[in-house]
Length: 256
Ligand SMILES: [Zn+2]
Image (cartoon, rainbow, N blue to C red; front, side):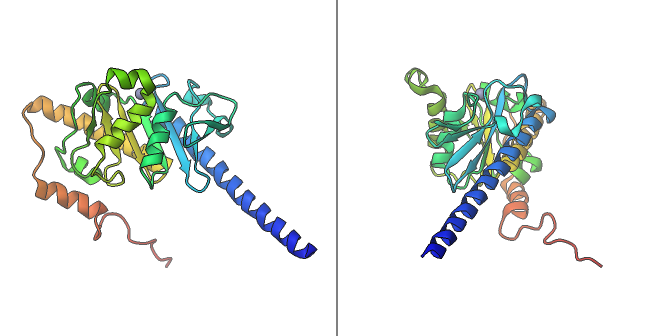
């Protein structure tokens, strides 16, 4: 009996250690992705944040509010639950935490979210314009038009601005697969991107800014420009993301 109890204690200890290590890794990757926002030129001042999600513990790791990116450490990351309530951390979490929490609650499969005010993608938000697929660079990364979420009503702003920002994104994605379209433009505000990890969500933020910049230049050349022909955009998206994807390496090269 004593042996069984000792064995049980060992299993529980191993399990908690596993969870602790996973959380430690998540803190590190969320911190690194936040620091990279600045390095990649996606943020001005502290206008952006990255979070990560641990589905096992249903906890979100997010940037603390207002702390400069260069001085961020993994220990400073704030841990909140799916209601945005702080579970661990000395600092206040990012003010956008309720938006992140709403997205994790509603979109299963998300493990990382990035919010920036990157200038070119934000220009589309400010003009309240969705971002059509004008070329293969866009088609390689995003399946069709990057959607625009509507502006918040006065009541929504008054009631719960950040929570309702998440709600209008969820509303816009009714009938859409958030994993196939890992980005949204929020009208008059800025973009959010996401992915299966904080790193992938960051890559999607970089891609979104790059295709928005190209789209703005293309619209300057032709203000009446429409989306590119679907047979080309589909080819590009499917060869990278479809069931018969041929982009990249199928497996590690064999050692010779
Ligand atoms: Zn914002």
